[in-house]
Image (cartoon, rainbow, N blue to C red; front, side, top):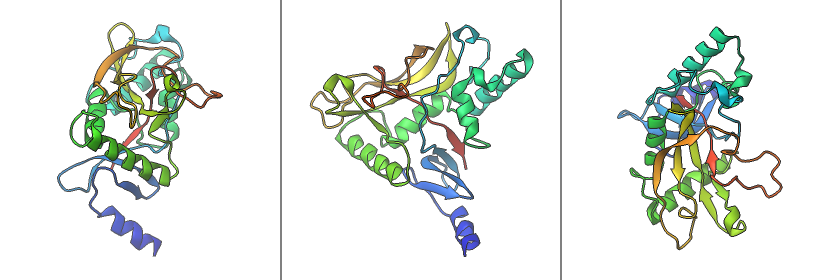
Length: 232
């Protein structure tokens, strides 16, 4: 019976916002092809690991691919092998690898696709998009995933906001591309309105993620998140 269910699932058609759960591979569907049978899933887990342990190594990895994060993963692996490093030097990528074979941190253009798809086809965080993200979040939490929203320290935790996401793509000057949801403008159910969602360059550092053991359970100021993706 289990084998039959798995076989039927493998031939199912999917849409953005569904849960893909076949053969031990599970995640939120964030992109699909015309057939609805192949696409990209987002990890249900989030990570607060640093992109790089030693900022001095930035710009040496050749992780400049903008449309395929797996290529950035391979570039970093090549750098590790050629320079006697380990994956511990790249904690975020080590975390993605720990999820299993095929998982990787999305590149900048993949991030834009993910956000646009989850947002209803554009980057305008309006009332319709707000409802969509809440629906996606409900699905993620129902499947024991980490919440897509986070508390906002500037409002004392009264309102929640969408977190930005970090890509695997390096930019010039030791920076990395991130999806930025400008703070203060993307609070859920807040009268301040819609955020300006865009790709920006951010200096690699240790202040981009949620602090482990944060007594308030809140994100740090810039509210960046990190999730891995997997093709199906």
